[in-house]
Image 1 (cartoon, rainbow, N blue to C red):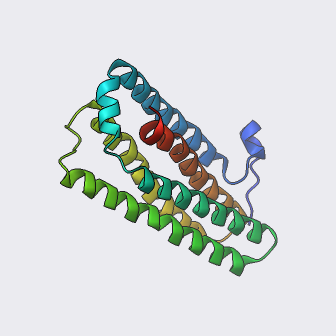
Image 2: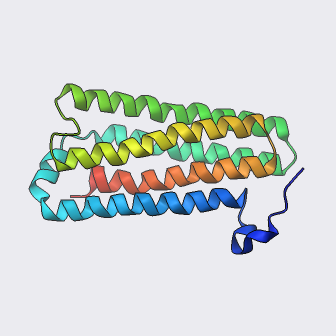
Length: 186
C-alpha cells in the first residue's frame, strides 16, 4: 500500500518518503560544512595541501566516480522499471546497482591500505586528517546506502525504491563534490 504524504508540505511532491529528504538535506549540510572547512584549511596552508594531494591516486578516485555514477544510473533504472510495473526487472536493476556500488568499497579499501602502507595516516598532517575524515564519513554512507538498497530491493515498492535511490543519489552527489576538491583542484 502506497503512503500518501500530503501532510509534508513542499516535501510531499518529492519522490520516496519525505523523511528521507529531511535526512538528505541534513547530510548535505554536514558534508557542505566539512568541505567548506577543507577549502579554508587549504587556503591557510596551500603548500602542505598541494604536496599531500600529490600522493592521492586520481585514477582510483576517477574509477570510484564512474562506479558511483553507474550504480546511481542502475538504481534509476530500477525505479523506472518499478514505476512501469516491472517488479522483477526492478529487483535485477537494483541488484546490479548494489553490485556496482560495492566496487566503490573495494577500491576505497585498496586506496586506504596503499596510503596507510606509505605512512600517510590521519595524524600525518591537516590534509590527511581531513582526507580521512571526509572520505571515511562518505565511505560509511556508501556502506549504509548499500544496506538501504538491499532493503528496498527486498521490500520492492515504488516508494521504497524511490526512497533508497534518493539516498544513493545523495551519496553520488557528495562524491562529485569530494573528488574534485580533494583529488583534482590545485
